[in-house]
Length: 195
Image (tube, rainbow, N blue to C red; front, side, top):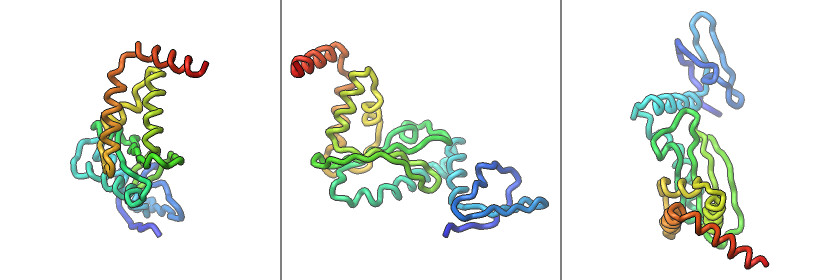
Protein backbone atom coordinates (compact mmCIF):
# COMPACT_ATOMS: atom_id res chain seq x y z
CA UNK A 1 0.00 0.00 0.00
CA UNK A 2 1.33 3.43 -0.93
CA UNK A 3 1.84 5.80 2.01
CA UNK A 4 -0.35 8.89 1.89
CA UNK A 5 -0.64 11.89 4.14
CA UNK A 6 -2.69 15.02 4.37
CA UNK A 7 -0.81 18.06 3.12
CA UNK A 8 -1.82 21.69 2.89
CA UNK A 9 -0.96 23.42 -0.38
CA UNK A 10 -1.86 26.85 -1.65
CA UNK A 11 -0.77 26.47 -5.26
CA UNK A 12 -1.24 23.21 -7.07
CA UNK A 13 -1.31 21.54 -10.43
CA UNK A 14 -3.85 18.93 -11.54
CA UNK A 15 -0.91 16.73 -12.57
CA UNK A 16 0.44 16.81 -9.05
CA UNK A 17 -2.72 15.29 -7.63
CA UNK A 18 -3.25 12.54 -10.17
CA UNK A 19 -4.41 9.44 -8.26
CA UNK A 20 -2.20 6.36 -8.53
CA UNK A 21 -3.50 2.84 -7.94
CA UNK A 22 -6.33 2.80 -5.46
CA UNK A 23 -5.47 6.13 -3.86
CA UNK A 24 -8.25 8.64 -3.93
CA UNK A 25 -8.00 12.40 -3.67
CA UNK A 26 -9.99 14.12 -0.94
CA UNK A 27 -10.41 17.85 -1.31
CA UNK A 28 -11.99 20.28 1.09
CA UNK A 29 -13.18 23.38 -0.76
CA UNK A 30 -12.68 25.61 2.29
CA UNK A 31 -9.12 24.72 3.30
CA UNK A 32 -7.56 23.02 0.27
CA UNK A 33 -6.48 19.92 2.17
CA UNK A 34 -5.56 17.04 -0.11
CA UNK A 35 -4.84 13.36 0.32
CA UNK A 36 -2.03 12.68 -2.14
CA UNK A 37 0.49 10.04 -3.09
CA UNK A 38 3.74 11.16 -1.42
CA UNK A 39 5.96 9.15 -3.77
CA UNK A 40 4.48 10.96 -6.77
CA UNK A 41 4.74 14.34 -5.02
CA UNK A 42 8.41 13.79 -4.10
CA UNK A 43 9.25 12.86 -7.70
CA UNK A 44 7.51 16.00 -8.92
CA UNK A 45 9.26 18.19 -6.33
CA UNK A 46 12.65 16.66 -7.18
CA UNK A 47 12.09 17.48 -10.85
CA UNK A 48 10.98 21.03 -10.00
CA UNK A 49 14.13 21.67 -7.99
CA UNK A 50 16.27 19.99 -10.62
CA UNK A 51 14.83 22.34 -13.25
CA UNK A 52 15.40 25.33 -11.03
CA UNK A 53 18.97 24.50 -10.14
CA UNK A 54 18.56 23.55 -6.48
CA UNK A 55 21.27 21.02 -5.56
CA UNK A 56 19.27 19.54 -2.68
CA UNK A 57 17.28 17.29 -5.00
CA UNK A 58 19.92 16.86 -7.72
CA UNK A 59 20.83 13.41 -6.43
CA UNK A 60 17.25 12.04 -6.34
CA UNK A 61 17.56 10.69 -9.88
CA UNK A 62 20.68 8.76 -8.85
CA UNK A 63 18.74 7.09 -6.04
CA UNK A 64 16.05 6.03 -8.54
CA UNK A 65 18.75 4.74 -10.89
CA UNK A 66 20.40 2.68 -8.13
CA UNK A 67 17.04 1.16 -7.25
CA UNK A 68 16.51 0.23 -10.91
CA UNK A 69 19.98 -1.34 -11.25
CA UNK A 70 19.76 -3.40 -8.07
CA UNK A 71 18.42 -6.56 -9.78
CA UNK A 72 20.47 -6.13 -12.96
CA UNK A 73 23.82 -5.96 -11.14
CA UNK A 74 23.50 -9.42 -9.62
CA UNK A 75 22.71 -11.23 -12.88
CA UNK A 76 25.45 -13.45 -14.33
CA UNK A 77 24.64 -12.47 -17.93
CA UNK A 78 24.97 -8.71 -17.25
CA UNK A 79 28.51 -7.37 -17.68
CA UNK A 80 28.06 -3.60 -17.50
CA UNK A 81 25.79 -0.58 -17.47
CA UNK A 82 26.03 3.01 -18.68
CA UNK A 83 23.73 5.99 -18.12
CA UNK A 84 23.50 8.70 -20.78
CA UNK A 85 21.33 11.56 -21.90
CA UNK A 86 20.35 14.86 -20.36
CA UNK A 87 20.93 13.84 -16.73
CA UNK A 88 24.58 13.23 -17.63
CA UNK A 89 25.11 16.09 -20.09
CA UNK A 90 23.66 18.49 -17.51
CA UNK A 91 20.49 19.81 -19.10
CA UNK A 92 17.54 17.68 -17.91
CA UNK A 93 14.02 19.07 -17.98
CA UNK A 94 10.95 17.94 -16.06
CA UNK A 95 10.09 15.74 -19.06
CA UNK A 96 13.53 14.10 -19.26
CA UNK A 97 13.91 10.38 -18.81
CA UNK A 98 16.96 8.55 -17.51
CA UNK A 99 18.55 6.57 -20.37
CA UNK A 100 20.36 3.38 -19.36
CA UNK A 101 22.28 0.89 -21.50
CA UNK A 102 22.75 -2.51 -19.89
CA UNK A 103 25.32 -4.73 -21.60
CA UNK A 104 24.99 -8.50 -21.62
CA UNK A 105 27.70 -11.07 -22.18
CA UNK A 106 28.46 -11.83 -25.84
CA UNK A 107 27.01 -15.34 -25.71
CA UNK A 108 23.51 -14.06 -24.89
CA UNK A 109 20.99 -14.04 -27.74
CA UNK A 110 18.18 -11.98 -26.20
CA UNK A 111 17.63 -8.23 -26.03
CA UNK A 112 15.18 -6.02 -24.19
CA UNK A 113 13.94 -2.47 -24.23
CA UNK A 114 11.57 -0.97 -21.72
CA UNK A 115 10.46 1.79 -19.39
CA UNK A 116 10.03 1.87 -15.62
CA UNK A 117 8.97 4.63 -13.28
CA UNK A 118 10.91 4.66 -10.03
CA UNK A 119 10.44 7.40 -7.42
CA UNK A 120 8.73 9.56 -10.04
CA UNK A 121 11.55 9.24 -12.61
CA UNK A 122 11.02 7.55 -15.96
CA UNK A 123 13.88 5.17 -16.75
CA UNK A 124 14.19 4.04 -20.37
CA UNK A 125 16.49 1.06 -20.63
CA UNK A 126 18.16 -0.84 -23.46
CA UNK A 127 19.57 -4.32 -22.79
CA UNK A 128 21.89 -5.67 -25.51
CA UNK A 129 24.99 -7.77 -26.00
CA UNK A 130 28.05 -5.82 -27.24
CA UNK A 131 27.69 -7.20 -30.78
CA UNK A 132 24.33 -5.42 -31.07
CA UNK A 133 25.83 -2.10 -29.90
CA UNK A 134 28.50 -2.49 -32.58
CA UNK A 135 25.75 -3.04 -35.17
CA UNK A 136 24.06 0.17 -33.98
CA UNK A 137 27.32 2.06 -34.51
CA UNK A 138 27.64 0.71 -38.05
CA UNK A 139 23.97 1.36 -38.93
CA UNK A 140 24.12 4.90 -37.56
CA UNK A 141 27.31 5.57 -39.51
CA UNK A 142 25.73 4.28 -42.72
CA UNK A 143 22.69 6.51 -42.10
CA UNK A 144 24.92 9.52 -41.33
CA UNK A 145 23.73 9.61 -37.71
CA UNK A 146 25.76 9.67 -34.52
CA UNK A 147 23.14 9.02 -31.83
CA UNK A 148 24.34 5.62 -30.58
CA UNK A 149 27.97 6.71 -30.66
CA UNK A 150 27.31 9.94 -28.76
CA UNK A 151 25.34 8.05 -26.09
CA UNK A 152 28.39 5.90 -25.33
CA UNK A 153 30.96 8.67 -25.68
CA UNK A 154 29.15 11.05 -23.32
CA UNK A 155 27.66 8.34 -21.10
CA UNK A 156 28.80 7.61 -17.57
CA UNK A 157 29.85 4.05 -16.73
CA UNK A 158 27.86 2.68 -13.79
CA UNK A 159 29.65 -0.65 -13.58
CA UNK A 160 31.89 -2.62 -15.93
CA UNK A 161 32.66 -6.20 -14.84
CA UNK A 162 34.74 -7.15 -17.91
CA UNK A 163 36.00 -3.85 -19.34
CA UNK A 164 33.51 -4.01 -22.24
CA UNK A 165 32.05 -0.54 -21.58
CA UNK A 166 35.52 1.00 -21.84
CA UNK A 167 36.11 -0.94 -25.05
CA UNK A 168 32.76 0.13 -26.56
CA UNK A 169 33.44 3.79 -25.63
CA UNK A 170 36.78 3.64 -27.51
CA UNK A 171 35.05 2.06 -30.53
CA UNK A 172 32.37 4.79 -30.45
CA UNK A 173 35.14 7.43 -30.62
CA UNK A 174 36.64 5.69 -33.65
CA UNK A 175 33.28 5.47 -35.44
CA UNK A 176 32.47 9.14 -34.84
CA UNK A 177 35.85 10.19 -36.25
CA UNK A 178 35.51 8.06 -39.40
CA UNK A 179 35.34 9.82 -42.71
CA UNK A 180 32.21 9.06 -44.71
CA UNK A 181 34.40 8.24 -47.73
CA UNK A 182 35.10 4.98 -45.92
CA UNK A 183 31.37 4.27 -46.05
CA UNK A 184 31.51 3.86 -49.82
CA UNK A 185 34.32 1.33 -49.45
CA UNK A 186 32.36 -0.61 -46.80
CA UNK A 187 29.23 -0.65 -48.96
CA UNK A 188 31.25 -1.74 -52.01
CA UNK A 189 32.91 -4.54 -50.02
CA UNK A 190 29.56 -5.72 -48.72
CA UNK A 191 28.11 -5.72 -52.24
CA UNK A 192 31.03 -7.74 -53.55
CA UNK A 193 30.52 -10.26 -50.72
CA UNK A 194 26.80 -10.50 -51.51
CA UNK A 195 27.42 -11.02 -55.24
